Length: 382
Image (tube, rainbow, N blue to C red; front, top):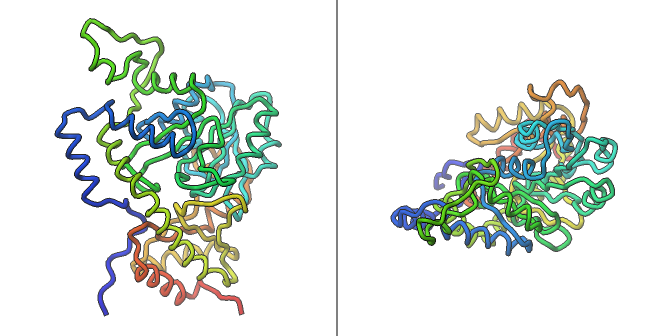
């Protein structure tokens, strides 16, 4: 029997073509602020069916710039799920505002709609719903609620490129959505992010903010006489996405359909395997949602010790795993919030994620499932 290659939890779906485009851009000596960035931005805006896309150095810097552009800061509150990567909470804190945590639905992992309305106050300026692990949230209901209270919606679509809600791509439903291109995301440029928006004024301000408030782009300065000088109308930052990264992103975009197809195949195998278990809950999605398969998470329903023991068992058998989505309110910077969010805590302490990426072979996935099946912490229904 041939030896099965080492199983990775996640890895970029790269080949020689990403290297070729990076080399081409490097040899051109025009590596930042050029045409490749514009082309990638156009790809995102067209795919998401929304007017504007702005490339940034990461999801985090993109969200930070959005909050700054919306003048959200000290004495303001922003509602978000605790069950999310801590960057969602950190950007709120970094602009001086207060994160207000709400719970999530246990099966979908997405923000609890009823809990949002309970937490809205006169200080609430925005809601950041998260499409958790690529599973689209009920964004239409959230948009209606936000409009009722005159607050902004900043959709955290970090994991959700290629997901659909009500038959339309995630990113098309909100005034503002922010995607990540981190190494574990659907397409990756190593690091990087894209803000998409329907607001022309916001798009203009974000382009200023990402480049020190400079009035001219790099392309504009290159094409103009040297006596045309830029101005700096606002205080900005350095949060640019390089052309090297953008070029890699364009190659990745060509693979998007293939990436999504393979991830769905892996998800289907996992779902079939776990559907008759007595101590494991599989994530579900709404009838109007089509997730992209960014991650695969299960929850051990009887005891958090089952998760810990299973992870140790898998590790001894060379199978990688990760804990479930973290609960921000349990981490040191936010513990003083002194709240109890039951479902978020269950996911963080009893959830586990399994390997998923396009290069995961059928043989590798079968081995993962065979080892889980032999574990004493895995229980089938009688």
